[in-house]
Image 1 (spheres, each protein chain N blue to C red):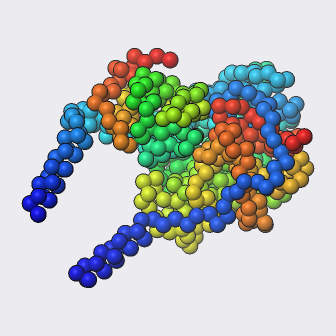
Image 2: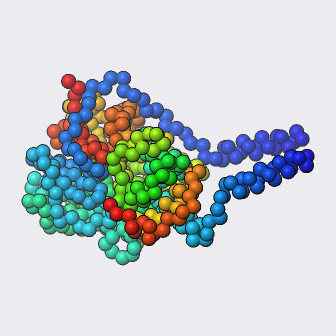
Image 3: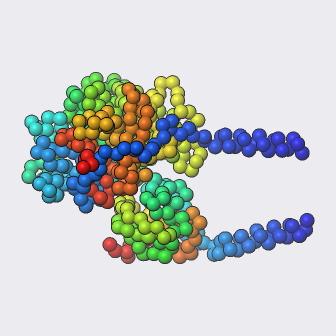
Length: 375
Length: 136
């Protein structure tokens, strides 16, 4: 009998241990002790403002996921026509938008969207550039279209950023094909890409000489990056990505490196089972920070202006899941503090610092708010 | 001991009788199976694997009075999206669900799945014909 009981105890212990223990984020999120800022609604009545960017005349260009491109100018919304056909399914739709760093000279805007173009049923992420003429898009040029099409609803990625050399970076998520896409550089999905601003492949991209590789790939092993910015002082591209259950990450993107998904992860399956026993492996990058539990990050910015003295250098990340804006305080490249801001405003989809130095936040079912000093 | 066994048998049979009030037809079961995949792909991120949603953010499907009592409105929400306040199990949710771009077949399947999972039961099968009829 005693034997039986000890066997049972061992069995119970083993089953608990093997049931995917997760290590919570070291730094826990807290409410701010002093909050010197509040929000001011600047663009109202938006559903899912996926992307926001600013034109030199301080008008705002906004993408609605449903497939509308809106120019907000002189307090009026102008619908910009001439978009390509948008594949509106699951997480796909009209996605991010940015302008060329030399927009004043060349007038190019860049946007990402889900597209059915090409062979096969379904869609995948596409990148296009165009110019705005009056209230319509002209000179539309398709720069990239990920393959193959799939009817899966998940993980289109979509975030866009330019670096200091005018290279365009963008993300495509694993498209719900975890086991085939992210670790295979001959396939699209689960990657950060780098292109010249005209869509051609930079000659020094990491895999240009690999047979069969997708030459636009810059880094791989990603799940679904929906946040990206260029660091204002180092010029590096920073991203965050959604993990499964737990395991959202912040990464600094370096050429040709493998960020590990799904071979390594701090997350587990939604069902609670694990798909990998590894949180680290040789040859795979560790995140700068990981979230357990997940916050479902979307939108990413770093505060570099002088409008928020006590926030300078902080990261701002939207949480779709908990409906707040998270501020992460860095000490060099380590997160030392996390705060939840403006909880309850809604699902935060996009975060950008405007050319006026203010932070603008796109919130679902609300609009775009600007963070301002409390009076 | 005999008493105990008969009690167990009684208990088991009552579970069988009350737990599955009507045996579902093959098509119904197949639809629920397909619906599970649709759920995983399109719904689970927000409504969570257990269908309980996120407190005060995403309404629950599990034992949801709204889902069970508002058959048409529920189809409509999946078909065309949902925005504005709805009350689910006494809590007001004022969020937005984007339309997912599902086919009428997929909508019927996922409705069959969510109304027969997470503790919910429903004997009236959703069909693509029913979904087709629902207008914005």
